[in-house]
Length: 365
Image 1: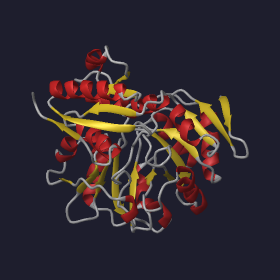
Image 2 (image 1 turned 30 degrees about the horizontal axis):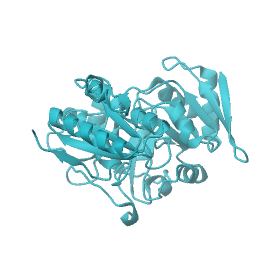
Image 3 (image 1 turned 90 degrees about the vertical axis):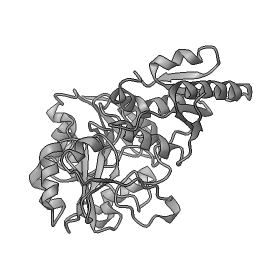
């Protein structure tokens, strides 16, 4: 059903199609698929974050994605497909290793960088000869891609460098009045983007950690390298994968990232919050549920990330927490780092880019 529309004067209607996340209404899916084939932009949920879809073979539609997101042309898009048989239409000279990874991790939050097929317009890949491609697992995304019958280029459905959207409301906060459709299927489950693996070099390398852990990948590819890169926006001519710029995923508020032993970090965050509130700053605390009570006696805005023992829960709430504190109008957000194993590596990557590589190291007491 059409739940409502958001209108921005002298712009366009953004229609919202509310669907069941497990069993989406076929009529809604067909309407969105038709819009994509006609060159319109459709935001839809994946298991990671909401994506902003455009027909990957339609140059005008692809260019609109960059325009409405205010995204630099040097930042490539990920092409989404519904079936492994479509991979040969997107990429060429596909190595055997790619098929092994596809067998183990698709559908799911794994993006592969491969040589680009000539059918895919160069604008999708920032003019490079490579292409990033994945097959999402979310039932709504899967149904939409099957119904569209065309490959869909889809970055996150937000303004460039903002925290990625994990709900339809987040999409509307950034893009209402600029895109035609949003499919609302509730909150995404993983909350951070897909892992990106580049298979075009001599050694396979992770360019962006994400929903598939480095440990899981190395169980299949023992020699897999992890290459942390932070590209300056003004120096970029075309990066191999999205999410590699030094400043990315950032809230409007200043974000202060504290690194160190948990007890010492919480004490330092408390002291910093106390100092900033005394300076008449509105302060936000983004922390595990178990630690929020430590800040109860100072005038700060607290948002829970979930249990500190559950990195899956922390990842799922990370971007939503940043956006909630922005909504409350805070000036500064204080957050601490987490263990960098498993999904923690993706959480660390997002926090580090949100601070443009800056963090506060706290010595143990």
